[in-house]
Image (cartoon, rainbow, N blue to C red; front, top):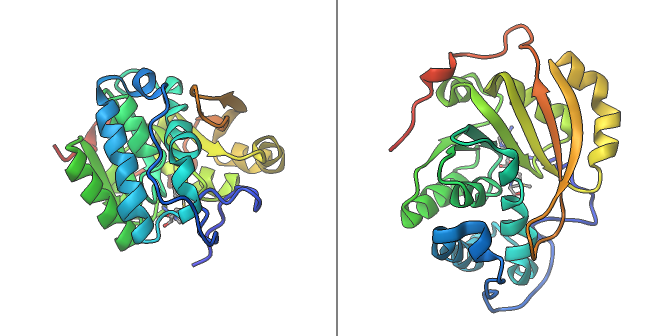
Length: 249
Ligand SMILES: C[S@@+](CC[C@H](N)C(=O)[O-])C[C@H]1O[C@@H](n2cnc3c(N)ncnc32)[C@H](O)[C@@H]1O
C-alpha cells in the first residue's frame, strides 16, 4: 500500500528510512507537566513504549527516538486547545497513536476513538491503551469503510496526522462528522498550499471555513493545523445519529 502522507518528503515524520539514531529514551522536557498535568507519568510511559516496542516493531524509525517528545508527542498535544470540553474525537490513521493518544492524555474529558486499518498497528494501539489504562476505543479498519463509519458514529471532531492529502482526508472525515463538526488535520508546511489546491474539493464535500492555525506546545516543534467545519452532509454521507456511537469502557 502506498501511503500519501501529505507531509513534504524532506519531513518524513517517522524516520522509517533513517539508518540509525540515539539509543536512549529522551528525558521529558520541563513542559510535560504543564501539558499533561497529573497524566505526565502516563505520557512518559507512552514515550517509553514508543521508544522500545515502537522501534522494535518498526512503527517509528530509530532517528525519531531523541525527538519523540518535541516532534511527535508534544507536537500532537499542541492541538488540544482546539477541542472543546467533552467533545467526541475520531483520529483516523493513528499508526502508533499520534495524535490521538497524546490528545487523550492531555484531555481526559475527550471521548477518543482511534481508527487504524493495519492489524499490527491496531494491536499495538490496544496494547498501549491497556497498559496505560486509559479510556480510548480502537476501531480496526479504513476510515472510508461503511462498517467503520457505522461503528464510530458521528463525532464532533475528526483528527489526522500524516495520513493523506487534504481532499482525500476531507472525503474520509466528512462521513465521520456530525454537521457542524470539524476536521482538524495536523499538516507540515504544505498546509496553506493544500487548502489552496483543494478548496473546490473541500466545498464540494460540504466543508466551509478552511483555515490554517499554527500552534505549538512549549518545547515542541510548531504544528500547522488545517481546520474546516462540515456545513452540510453530501449525499450518502453518515450512517448513524450522533448519540449512537458505542464506547468501550
Ligand atoms: C504515515 S502513518 C501516520 C501515523 C500517525 N498518524 C502519525 O502521525 O504517526 C499513516 C497511517 O494511516 C493509516 N491509513 C492509511 N490509509 C488509511 C485509511 N484509509 N483509513 C485509516 N487509516 C489509514 C496507515 O495504516 C498508517 O498507520
